Image (cartoon, rainbow over all chains, first blue to last red; front, side, top):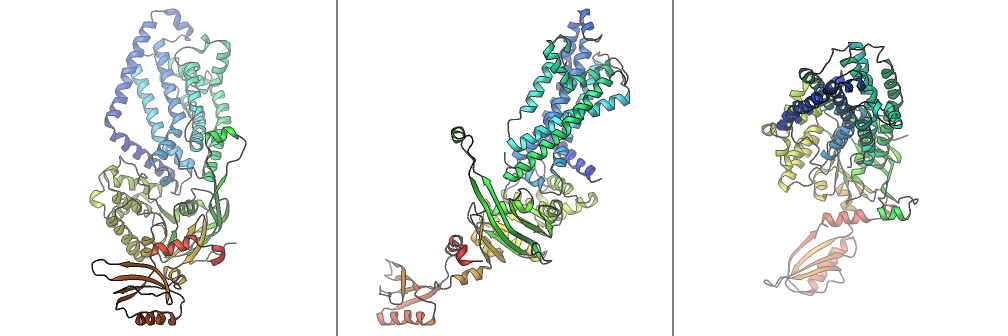
Length: 269
Length: 340
């Protein structure tokens, strides 16, 4: 109950703050439609090359890229939100006021990011919905595999995000983890083009990235209407990734937090 | 085992804290393996703050006042020693400590600038686990107490420094803690606003509600007007603990008299002349004389010397040493010699 009340506090706070920047709020949603239009015409252009669908696993390019972009956005939000929120609170001077409330620091950091994660989820739903209106070939996915995949995607992405927040707490600036992962994922994650066209070494790297499996799994579910068995390998990989990196991320976070409290730099920026 | 009793709100024993000295990039490159030097922020601090008292932490900049408050609030971990706040061990019962304290800093930035004063308080009330049904009443009551009801719907960015500080005090009271840590609450406020805040602390928080208040300040007059007792900190060490009148008594031996005469006289036999000034318009001479010893005879000796000089005495008054002088002595005395 207490956690829910806290969650509500953070959601209301961030919603009110976002509403105070009205133009930005409106432009965000206008941007969704504008961006989809670009991809729609790009997809229409690529549709002139039927052999392209073969290398995309039988999908049209518009549907392929819409799912890829959705999860790239999800990845970048979840990866960066924890660190960004910590940094924002440090710079705004509100971190100290939050840390003297009777709540654990990880709880505060996780809940601080709840609004951005919710907002990113809504953005993705709107993006996919509008994508469907623009002509993407989407199926309503089977609920259980979709929820399983979504849960594992969040756990995998969050593990890196929590590690990154730890780095911001200790080093204040310079978060190489998020930057490397975002750049690597954009290039290698099968967002805009299939992994199969990459050189062999790059393909191996791509298979290590959680976004490759996240996007692949969701494309199977949404575009092809696949079953749980079809995406099982993706689920397995994400499970292993989360099992390794979630404890590691939390460990780095706690270590950084402790060092910052020992060195007295917790609220410095 | 710490000497913590039910009457003690805060107790510290041997609290120590050192911070690594920041090294320049050039120094790091020249000696990459050399360890950074340490700055001792707290050096074996022992304190006991009684329930219901306003206890001042007084010292110059860098004395360790803020570090001590941050350690007691759980924001910084000590290197050694132990402390209890409201009976809870700061190392093992962090949440109990945070429930027991309200922390007010002098940092104006500790609120969300685009939210209103009321919205900010509601957010922090939820963080302090105030029951949801009670939040509107509690927030309204506190806004009224800090006299911000009329301005509560305005964005925090539109608040003046005094309003921001009053809102910070209201936030610290949201969960009705028995203990308040106030870190230079009137710094950056104009004198009138600062006096209002001091009145509020003394009359309402301490006098009205019996809160225990640990006040860090380097404002001597603020400490003198608010604190029941105080600790003098310098370079992380407690120089002395006591009441202001006890501190004054320590230096009572320094009896200084201000004597106004119609002409200069030799008073060396009665005391040491600290200063002598002449008023050009009236020709009057004003001398500050520090008597040689504490006995009543020394004052008699001064009076005799004045009578023997034949000068007309216009006025003679006992001078209290200025607070600045008193605290300067206290800050710089050797605690090893004087003790606490």
